Length: 132
Image (cartoon, rainbow, N blue to C red; front, side):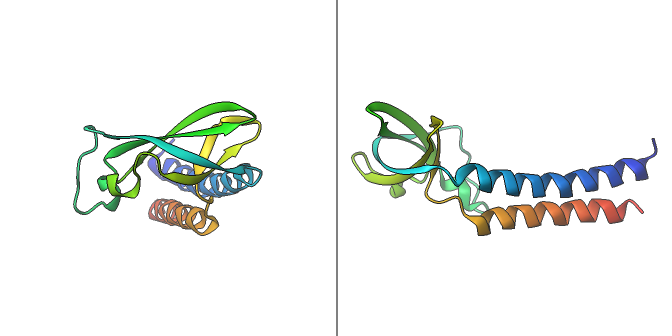
């Protein structure tokens, strides 16, 4: 297989994959149930390397939250900026009623998912058209 065919296939896979990701991510979280969680720990994560050009690199703490579903206590962890959370703080999360270990913090944002999808589609289109 020559390079052009491989690049075209890669572009198509990126485009289709991003669309499937968008649809599946959005659909899968629509039945999630809201509940309150309590921050039980905020610990520094030394594996995060600070990059002033990357706003997410300031998420250098692991925040552990507890929440209760049907009388059973669960925990979830996220990476966040230390100033965003404190021990004892209440926050809203959403969990999968079929598997309460699966959680998202806040709403699964359709605009965010569309943005991620759009960037991937653009990359796929560039790869696809550069292969000609």
